[in-house]
Length: 219
Ligand SMILES: O=C[C@H](O)[C@H](O)[C@H](O)COP(=O)(O)O
Image 1: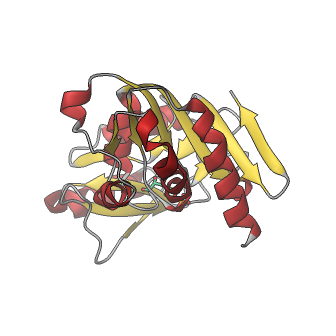
Image 2: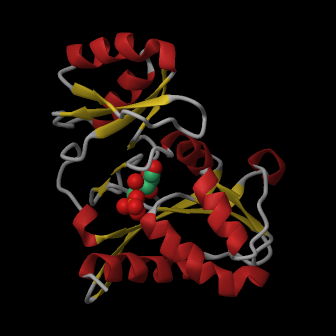
């Protein structure tokens, strides 16, 4: 197994410590979370079920025999486990490489604790080298792209990709993100933007960084 996958798996295994007893948990999307779901299968009796942040995650959870729960029926979740594309020591994140950012942000907001799992390649000093995903209502694509250019970004349309919500993604390159909370709000205020991949105002509560040598916990 490649070192990056070893790091993902170690972080995923470390997140099992945060599993509550007899409660519904939130589960994110991506290759790191897939390691977590695979471990969760053996512990499925311990939880009541899971709220999935994507169709792909829902299918993988079901394959492990884990009951799916609609967020509207779940109330506040005690814990949400998800990965990231970039993470800082302040636990601020870029997410959405897999296009699941909006449902991820909703579930994170509805959870008391957000545990982020990532391999060490995701750790950055400053956010923005990874193109920032922005989910946009299809008819607003050109308008939103122009507004993003005015902010200094270079939006690239993710061709052929439709989110689980029926929207499109603009991946924004060239942003040097000095004030992540401010930029997160500014992007959200553009008409037609559904959400963006900055998890800054509400970052992770716990960050588990896995590597070939172990897991670093940042809380
Ligand atoms: O939309 C996808 C999610 O935000 C993922 O958590 C993120 O892209 C990280 O994915 P991976 O674990 O595959 O690197």
